[in-house]
Length: 130
Image 1: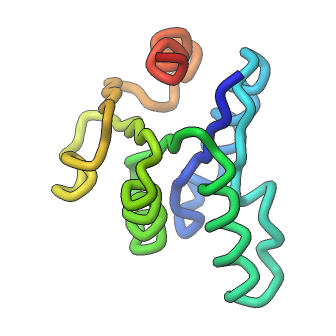
Image 2: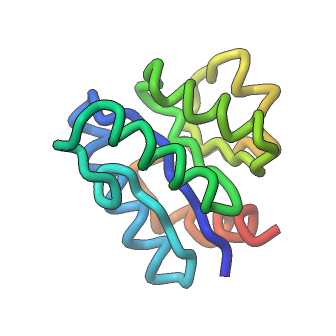
């Protein structure tokens, strides 16, 4: 079973709703996920949140970046994962992703409708299990 850290902003209502949906579906398909908004004590000190996210990335085999409403923290997590040689998959809708992610990502999975998870989940899982 692959272990996956899902990175996405928590500064967008859309991401806050989308992330757990994606995580639940992935887990129902046998992909073990670390979802920071669920698995990190968000009310702890900023340093505790940072350390928990760092540990989540270190303890995951690969990173899934939800490339929608990207944030500075999202970029930091991606950069850290890249620096410690984690496999990075970017999930994006039809928009340009940040330049650095474009070349850090091992896979870029694009969909026209990122909200319609059931339409692309099997193809995304193939990328994850690669």
